[in-house]
Image 1 (cartoon, helix red, strand yellow):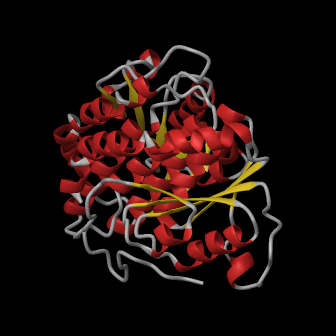
Image 2 (cartoon, rainbow, N blue to C red):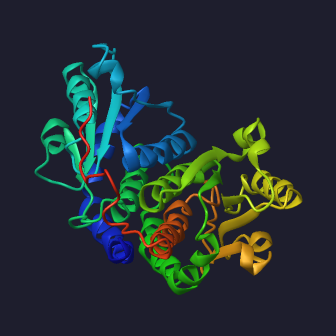
Image 3 (cartoon, rainbow, N blue to C red):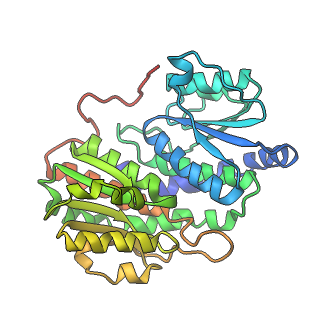
Length: 351
């Protein structure tokens, strides 16, 4: 797991270099016939990437995006009206049975279909009309890391193909920003002991980093066996905050931009409750970065961007890397093997 976390700058650079031209042909096709709705189908870590895709695509294109419920097709036999829709399946292995059923039926129903996978010879690659590859190399750890961030990169490229204001020059900086996040590895390893006896926690994110709350929580659950609930800062205030008591651990993704005010307010409430808080941020959020150092993990780079897009639009990839490192270090602190979580396998097939 740790080796694959370290491979992410190279995986991102390779994926962008080898795939960005393929999106140009899709961009031309979509320009003449844009979809009225987009549906994203995925499971597990890939479903968390899809959650990011929903926010990214709706924010940057204005096209409504839905997350598919595969059981509608696989269990209930439902047939959806998908003509003129863009249906995107995301799967590391390309062998997620229910996700593949969704993409197969969508194509039969007249939808434009896209597959995103790390395996060029997978079933998904053969089912989708357009297939885009994660060039991360074979992922050996059960806990997905490098494939998650490369999937996010391909979703940026999908937004680009849909006419969003995504700039390729900005995407080319993502490997550099990922490398900056990796500089935190030793600091995070030293901090992991503080959470050695953690059995339950909450992870909070909002907007473009909401998916990272899900993904970091998943990593804590599958590698450290910690019960990790995930919420947006808005939803957390609608009841779940009542569970917080003294020393209760809460992790918060705190980028600059429009979500910072609610995350800041949330942290203030948690401090009053004497919770154990830890913020993930970067050098461009000066207010967050200047807080108590023991309560902040700061990516040593300025990730905010100028222009019409949200200033935090490129933070999700470099922000999740410290979370991955913390999960790996905490598993080691607990004497667990994060590469072989109990009862889990690399490929999960469900219907």
